[in-house]
Image (cartoon, rainbow, N blue to C red; front, side, top):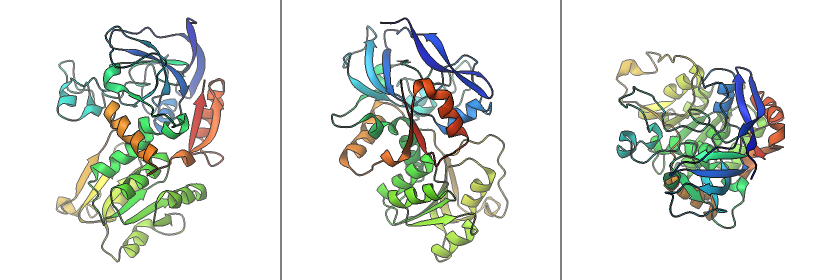
Length: 358
């Protein structure tokens, strides 16, 4: 086995570069995964732009599909050569946050200080997955075997995009017969659209402007697609719902405009489920918030992780109830990672998600 590997490394804001790095060592509870397919996330673009701080020299990426190359001495229930995925969030399973049922916040609120979103380690606090190999911490809590018959691309959305989008629908507590608006139909918004349909929403309104994304939204279950460049989405949603408003509005872009629009389309007592990654302070307009008296709920979600979450998502794929392969629009080799970042960060050529294969 070689001693070094290729990895996409954060150099400085504006530069993620392919470099040679040592192959990670594994501790007793870890596993070494040989990456077979991974992808680029919108959060990686925030890192590239310097909008989300990470250490220089860190390997980026948090969506791994691969094969177990090596197991730590204490890991049981897995074998080398097994196909697995791990979630973007890799909880330990025993922290205060995990035991409170919020595994994504693993590591937050310890005696060493408050660190939100502590469960997101890959490409954030430890080396990530845009490489030939990655060390998976707490392997027994995080590795999920891939069912026979499913391809890498079929399960590629499970570690983050699918889990996050579905999480937004779940956090919004969508009920059978609900009307739901999903603002932005990027990969996370599209998965939120699928999640809303699976949870029983019967009127799903997608807001988007890119024709290719609008078409995929319809294909994946949106009942109405509103082009916000052609009409005011708030007025359109009010019209579609006969003035009632939606039960749940999902914000999947991370901007002031979409957050505010979500508030404005809620029925009294409705829920705003926020998935966007915001790069600045948000303002809550007094009228849309009904001066704080509208019985509204605002909930946030960080991608649920852990092996049980991954198993459930892969069961959804295996059952045929969701097919997210249309989200993979471009394919690159790891050697082309800088080219892939250029395409993805500038949203050219109708890109939704890219598949990266070492």
